[in-house]
Image (cartoon, rainbow over all chains, first blue to last red; front, top):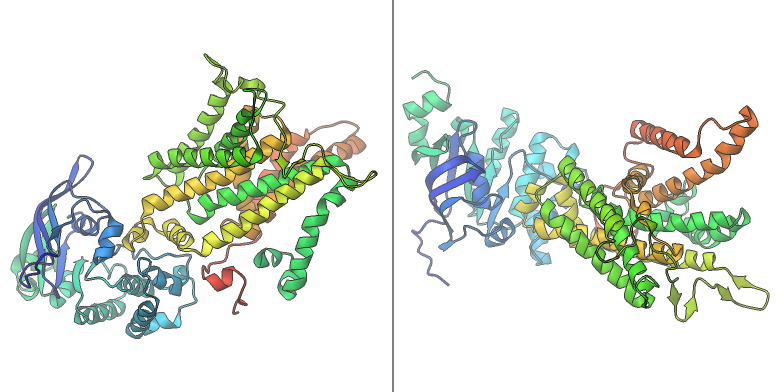
Length: 245
Length: 366
């Protein structure tokens, strides 16, 4: 058991590169996450945000560089093992199981666990956090609204008891009021001690909530800093918040 | 069996116990009824049982795991040829049922994994094309493995295959009960096939509500999300291929023993498509639906054969449409109508995967 230094990052990417065949999508990035943080990764379409997230979750593999989690190198570890180690991904476009019911979707989140009593307790906690979801337990998940589906996807990820939650554009395609709700949920998750890495296009909202943030542009990290600093950075404001510089 | 008996119209939902009883009676009595119309109909019934087994197997792959397989008949071929190799004068081997059938199932499972490995990253149309190719490759091998050593005997096929022999009872000879009363070989095969179908149904229902079944449902709905909740998608997809193939191998072995003759002609692409059609027609992902579909589509062409010819002769005095042509025509028409009227099949799949609901232990709350 390696000694866990509280100051050591929970997750660390060093010179991480990711390629789809010949195309380099991520061209060597450094990224760190500390326990209990909410960090967001913002940037334009095609900047490599989702790719980075998938590489951390293990659904994609690095083509170069290092990835360490809780002190050990995990590059090359398959996705299902990373989940057992505590890295849970809520994929882009929600990725719920449309033909299963809401309850089955949530229970699938505990697929890797066998502690029945604890699972029931966790389910109860998720229901409390997401009252809308509780009302819809027997409903087929494909018939839910976008916001509800997103809630189910987050709830499902929480049922694996993650240490690190990776959220891929949870606000995509949702009405502002629903997006606010989702961010409330994220706040609760953070309070429970889960570290969150958030990929967002809605930079204004993401930066406002984040401890720190990274800005990605064509496969590279161009800026990083605290959420508030970046929110007031003129370059960020002109590039991502639609303001003339 | 409950939800299968519930698929019986009118009776099923209102009186499940009576429906179950009716199902058992129908299953047991049908060969006797069929025999009244001639032994041909008992043979057709036997083949329908084999088609049910095949459909249940393909449904594991297509309906549960969502992997579109257009070469499924290849596994049937593997099972049938295994039986033909190991229990016929072709190689002079006459191994018993208990060895040959598991071997056939095993070889088919291996073939399933062999097909699964290179196709792990493929889905949908692309997977369909590769599996289609695989089915054809197997058939072409069976056609051509005659040089330098004659393995498959090419297009002539292998004949004089041993029948099945269970507990010292040779199914090909029939069972002499008293001097004047004999249970015919055809009937014996029917009941053996029926036993295999019942076994398959029980097995598949258990699988569906197990961790494996739920993982397949997850992969079918969203593979990335399935990975993200900790499912080893690679192994589970291979398992789906292997298990589906096992069912194909078993029914292939039964086919070889029953028919006494196998040739590549029985394992064409049309057969793969026919089985897929049965699943889609009946209700993909639902066991009851799959069985209904397999039954309906194995009887329809035969009924046509016996009705279309005399009817045309009576009305026009000559035959305009060959039953085979008519069969494809009507099948297509049936499929089009199904897609328009009941796109989820005759008996649509349930959406719930909870143990209680699927095993029929609990009334489904309305």
